[in-house]
View 1 (cartoon, helix red, strand yellow):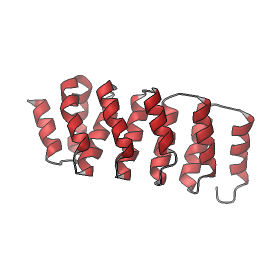
View 2 (cartoon, helix red, strand yellow):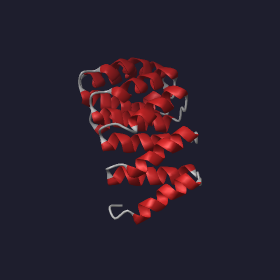
View 3 (tube, helix red, strand yellow):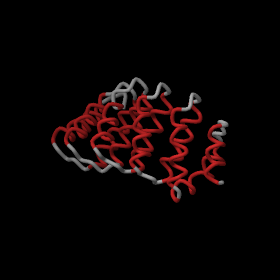
Length: 178
């Protein structure tokens, strides 16, 4: 009954914080609830998709079904949904190829918040692959101050002290806009 109530709330579009907060404990303990919520990831209402993604990210349920559902939203037409999907994948900590590749692609998204959240998510995955470091380095030259700042923090968190990373961070010290 609880899982049906959760699904019905999502279908009705109740994306208010109280509903999302109420769903989170159910998601962690009940894979049946997750399976019933996954169809809502393609709901026409972006607020519904956003809320379901937020709940999945907070749940800690990193099942293949949940991760694949979140991956599909990295290309959503709504930038808020793309951004929260990136954050959710970072929180779940699954650093398989599809997740990393999907997040790397978002580093060039047209929306600066999406780029910033993708960078943060990559750091949460604790994957220090040179390709990730290189992509984060490229964000040090991003046109958006917040993205540059998050990229600098991400590179610091990764702990890569290569000369390229150090030079990139030093260049931010000399940048009048930073």
